Amino acid sequence: MITYFATQPHFIDHLAPIFALTGGEFLVKPSLVAHAAKRGVEARRVWPHETARSVGRGRGPVVTAAFGDFTNVAGSHRPLVLHHHGVGQSFVDRPHGSYSNGPGRDRAGLILEPNEYAAAHSRAAYPQAQVVGYGTAKLDAWPFEVQTGNPDPVVAISFHWDCKVAPETRSAWPHYGEAALLALREAFPDRVLGHAHPRIFPELWPVYEALGIEPVADFEEVMRRADVYAIDGVSTLYEFAATGRPVVVLNAPWFRRDVEHGLRFWEYADVGVQVDHPHDLVGAVHEALHDRPEQRALREWAVEFIYPNRGHAAEVAAAEIVRFAGETGGTVMASAIYSTRRLSDGRYAIKGVVDGEQRTVVAELGDAPGINEVTRALEAGGSPPAEVAPPAAVPPVPAGAATPAAGGGGDSTPPVNEQQALAVAALLDPGVDTLRSLLDEVRDVPLLRAALAFETSDAGKRRKTAEAVIEERIAAVEAEDAAVAAFLVESGREARPLEELEGAELIDIAQEAGVEVEDGFDDEPAQRTALINAIAAAVLAAAEEG
Image (tube, rainbow, N blue to C red):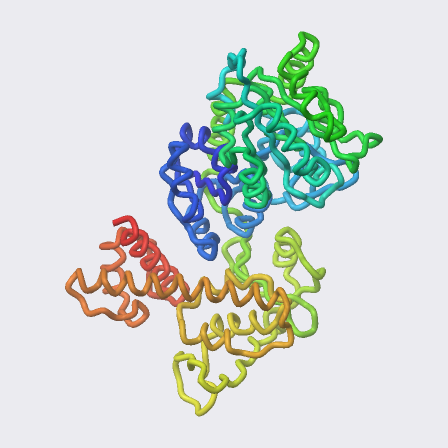
């Protein structure tokens, strides 16, 4: 099965037309289920801490539309497809994983770029990957020429988020500011829409409202309603232009004119009327609406280069993904990472599988190793498993804190299993960057609450982040436990924790809950834990949907 995974609305927008042709499953955050439905996708919701486990259940390719989503699943066994959700912009002096010439994409078997400009960068950086410049599927539904000529034209303005990768990825919003927006509203009363990149829209929403500009979060609505579009950024600039309507290109003083990155900076910046100064914005919009023949020609030139296969791009992408799935045989990859934990001596303990063999090694890595570096260390073997440091000792539970109930006795500190100890150690050691994956195996709420009570030397952002992750896991487990208890009672059973059930009864409950049980299930601890988590997630999902 082909799995699609997206954590932002605009990622769903790019993948939905392709998913409609290939089928499979589509995983999204719970908050995005409704947005996915608007795009015709019946998505399955996955809590952030469940991503690795949910993706790990399948065998076919996993398709993502962003570098961040790609890194979330890069530890999986499965073949990976990385779909670029922009126009393929890259920055010659600032390589970054989010862009076509950036690092960190080694695990991608198939890279889908929007055009040959971006594809050439990816081929040069990742010769081992299959790279296709196919177009942009989300534009297939839009005609090449949207009729305008509106006597009362609607103007949309938008800004990119303040990304610090390069000066050109910064937002131009501070340069234009409220004065430019106010002038625009006065020139086009009741006909200005305020849009923005999802990462900055919450900040600009109240500004738009205060200035009498209608905030519009969904770019699809902008595409339906606007006659002209002004923006500083990249992808939606060209998406709007691809419908045959005029655009205004907002420049900022920190955009370096002497550095040629290509596309928006600067080869195809003439896709629309360019503005350098806020006081010229209104005049530029009027000029764009006039849409002179020479400007139309420049727009078409840019769009033809940036978007090949217009009108049938989704078919091309779907064919490539299906072909890739066939070539990989729907099999799993050779290596996968289960957990990474930094030890007191600065080295890393890495757990995973290589060619079907469970392996634990210790290796010296950098301060913030990426998934590719960790995978190479696991495959190379590192130090023998015997050298792995034992889990950090669990400190005494502070007075008043809940006591972990995990097998065995003891007057002050009951023993806990390895995963539980790792979960506590993760909070105590700010060097551990895999807290969520560790907590996937922990369902002991008292232990998690005890972990929150431990004092650590790190009272800053990392501590607060760790606390938030643990609290998120507690809430998830409690919600699942409540749903499971109700499910058991409804089925005529005693409401008991799943952990207390025998293997045969656990299998019966899994089947009743619609959870597939692996062939050869023998109640081995890892299998048992995975099945319990799957049952709990399925029962909760069914309860919330019902």
